[in-house]
Amino acid sequence: MQDDARPLLTQLRAQASPLRDLIGHAERIAALDVALRRWTSEPWFQSIRLANIRGDTAVLFATNAAALVPLRYRQQALLDYMREQLRLPCTKLETKVRPKLTGR
Image (tube, rainbow, N blue to C red):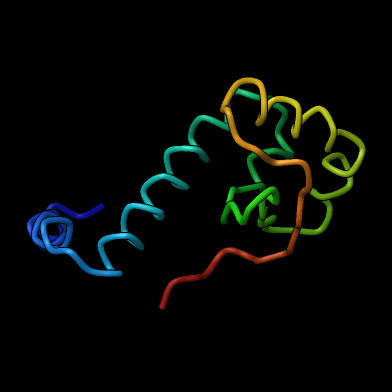
């Protein structure tokens, strides 16, 4: 995150608002995505990112459909890791292909 955005985030976190909750949720998802990298160092997993946690469902985005093939075969192992190591209540995965945004 850029340094000039930090003072704004600090002020938004200090105010009681739905935006503060949204920022907190986004920061939690980002931290969990970093922690998820410990599950495997296989190259295909670099194309996967945690997008959201909705109840018992982990939403994962892949930059390409090919990365979802090995994930399909290892989804139970990933769910087990999320429950045991990250203490998430996830029992289901929802996957979507979302290519990386190119420069604007």
